[in-house]
Length: 207
Image (cartoon, rainbow, N blue to C red):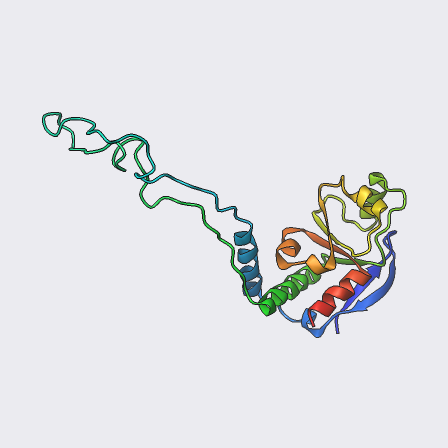
């Protein structure tokens, strides 16, 4: 059975956390890909819009005479063949969102966590507390854990207001609850920094 080391905010090891046997198996990137494509599609606004010839103003009059100009005959300036005419088969507002089965989403989360665990990018701490609410103290914590300069997904369910104040000015840190963790956020960040309590809840979700 794989074990995840648990550290305190000084960077010292204070215990371990048992991981499911699946963390010792090879990563399945295909499942991760399915989930990430879905999450990215769901973030699309789908607001691109073009006007068809029916929506272009003007065009009731023939733009030039039928013969004698050397140009191709035209009956309306709204024609897609004309400059500033309508667009044929152009994009219109639409909803790109879709869903995949819950089991697939959870499987993708498991595989993404396995990937981070395999690359030593899954860090577990006993708690995330910065009583002073000062950003410099939180930056010092990241330095103790050797996470300076990395994009971090911080997972904690019982973060105090002081910790949120200390972390909000660090642009490379994204704070999230264990219930909201997904494969897209895991793969988007370099490192996962989770409290032991939050990690246990995530593992419970994956059972």
